[in-house]
Structure formats: structure tokens, C-alpha cells
Length: 199
Image (cartoon, rainbow, N blue to C red):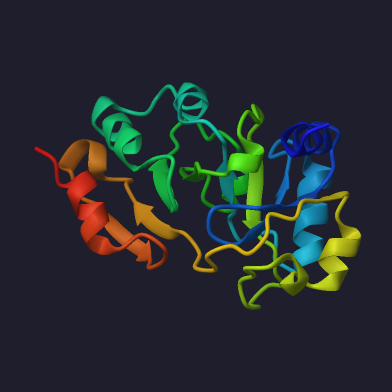
């Protein structure tokens, strides 16, 4: 069985997985499974009031899951994704509420380019595979032992770049074209500007 099949089976079965993204190692679970989400947060020592992102492994699946996204934002996402960004989107339908914490009107979306997980069809709630406030991990052995031991599946993707995703705020983009960087990371500002400052 391939890594992608193992991963999808783990997530669909209510498990928590350690996996390689295109930036750092992550933790993932089913975003609709409250018990799995609670386990993921407990493994990290992360307060459940802090939002996480929803990750999908295919751009078309991500766009289909969010049909209320406007045309301008949709076109921007097609230019940015897959890539090493997390986008903050308006979430009027309050989808994936367990990932949104106290702000259900905002959704963090991530679509990485991860070869070993190509073909995964399920969305996941994801967070970095470190203890809350700890350093990001570029190698599996850097992931805290208690997280690896507590996960149901651990996938070794070798050494990763080690810089987390850039968080891009697109919540006002549809109406005004306004965007901003909420966290600097793997994708530089000029690259974002080229993709987003389109008339």
C-alpha cells in the first residue's frame, strides 16, 4: 500500500498522522471528527481555541469544497496553488468549523505540492508537527518523540525545506483586490505580488 493510501485510510478512520508537507512536517486528522481534532490538539499541547488550517491535496477538490468563493478569489487561488502558502478566506457558510476555532467566518486553506501524498482525496485539519510554541521540524527525527509515539501513522518524507508556509490574507480580495501577509514564510512577497496584483 502506498503512503497516500495509508494516509487516507488513517484520516478516514479517525486517526492522527505525522506527514511531510512541502515546507515542514505536519500533523493531520479528519476536520469533521471532533475526537480526532481533540487528540491532535492534545498531542501538540495547543489550545483548542487557536484556529488550524484545512489542507487538501488537489486544487480542484479545494475549489469544489468551497463553492461560495467568488470568481476573482478563485482565479487568485488557481495562480497561487498548489504552493507553500496558507490562504485566509472568507467563510460565509462556516465550513470546517472545528478548524476555525472562535472565528468561523474565516477559513485557512492550504494546498501543498507533496509527491508522496498525490492522489489523496480527503481534506485534513493540519498543524505543524511540533509542540505548541516549539520549533518547526524539517526532519522526522526532529518531531518530538511524544508526538510520533502518539500518532497512528508516521510518514518519513526525508529532509524538508524547514520554512513554514506564508500566510496570505485574501478575505477582502474579492471586493477590493486588497491582500496582505499575515505571516512571512516560504513564499516571498514579490512572488505573491506577481500572482495577486492582477488587473
